[in-house]
Length: 274
Image 1 (cartoon, helix red, strand yellow):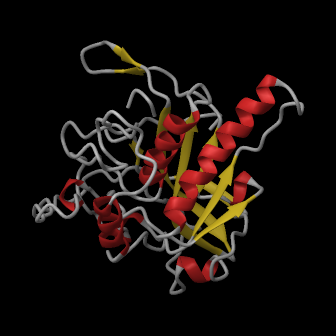
Image 2 (tube, helix red, strand yellow; image 1 turned 180 degrees about the vertical axis):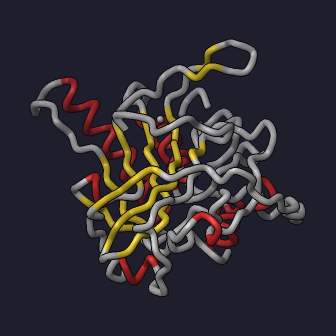
């Protein structure tokens, strides 16, 4: 979106800004413990290793969700080839301020941080979230960066103030491999506070699993925003997230490729995660 944005973007992106992979190698063995247990019941330990995963060669097709009665937009969501990219507890890192106090840059960074924290508070009403000080601990990392220009299918380039990029990784933690979502959110500081907060609210929605856009302008996850920045989650945003949280299985234990369930192929012309 024009008002929506790690120090690097990982791998080639699928049309919905998803980089989807599954683990390989002898070290990835089946485990019976859940990822949430491995995380210490909501804590955020740093994994000993994190490695990129490989895209399944032929994910199985599944039918789209039926259109609901308008109370949410679940029918627009798509899972990854490894399932829904959600976890029971999210660990979030926000790039800290670095400028010298009293400078214009310090004020801009402080405004950026305040907008991001206000947006995160909205999602914290629905989700279990911990803030961490080390980006290696986080599944979601927010960077004070303007996203690079995005080249469209017709050759034009599009600028945006925000972008979320999803990668599925294998993380080695407590002597086990786990399949996990890792999301880098780039948010430009070059916006007024309220549009920036709206951008952060939207991109965090992608990060927490809403990899689609709403078709109504009053929703935080709208593809095309209305005349005023959306600073609070709408009833439809909340209902869609509540539906998503009820989906099982979540991200499966990282095993060998044949044991990762294929979900749905990438839909044609899927929206980018701006």
